[in-house]
Length: 402
Image (cartoon, rainbow, N blue to C red):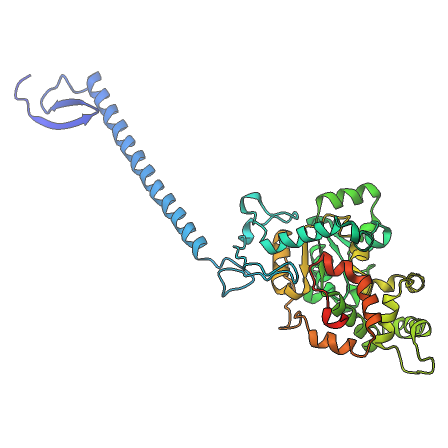
């Protein structure tokens, strides 16, 4: 080869190939084909490496963006202003330290009665202590007659079922239960939103789409009791009795005339001391009836209407049924969103807005209603409801008893 002129130098791996411009023997040779093939392969290899690098940069940017979004997102859908939700404690269980916890991202919530394990919240101490207190009282032999009751049809009739989301709710009247029933009605699909449920339908169990646990076979009942999320709400027992008396005997809705025209006269005939007194039923009459150790004869006469004033024990059998959460009316602003999260339904429905101050315990009102009632009658009333006071951590009302 003569007059060799350097045309190009390309490195493929560690190999260098010298191409000449005048070398005719090189053109069309196998070597030329191999060089072209190597060059093509090298270019494609470099292009793939560049594409992979770009893809990696884009992926890392997406991950960083997602992390920043989750970091600065409001952690609690119930309150847009607070980073943490501070919970109050049970009345008698001792003042606990404020518990703070992050709410789970609703996108990870599972509509199955449980949240996904990866986002499962550790139950705040207040709820753990409520359940532990209840179990300890249940084990107290001295209170067995006040804390235990058979899981009878009467109890099963009080428990409403949401099979779609595996939830059981035990009804305890005069503790905001109408709103919880609305929540379950929406979850069961009978109505699309709480605001669209007519008030006349909420308590009409033929129209509201809420089956009672008693409507299932024994095997199906046991299955649900063992596997479903279960809860109910309690309130100071004496304040609840005042609420029941006001609602059923003082205000007395027109669609419930039997409280004023049938039940009230029955209580007056048996428990009014002054037979010449012609006024309608008084709170004093009501207290004597409830505190009477032989009240059951009248209870049978009144039927299921007694659910508005019988004990939580008689309604929900808390020592026989293992409940998941016990809510308190006094802390419902915190308890309601917590229950929805624990049930895995907070992304589907919200508890209706609670008017300010409506859940606060009102000692002045309690004192006013019990004013003039004999200590003997109040002590007999407390003796009947002592199990409720102790099971759920409510303080003994010494200001009324002594």
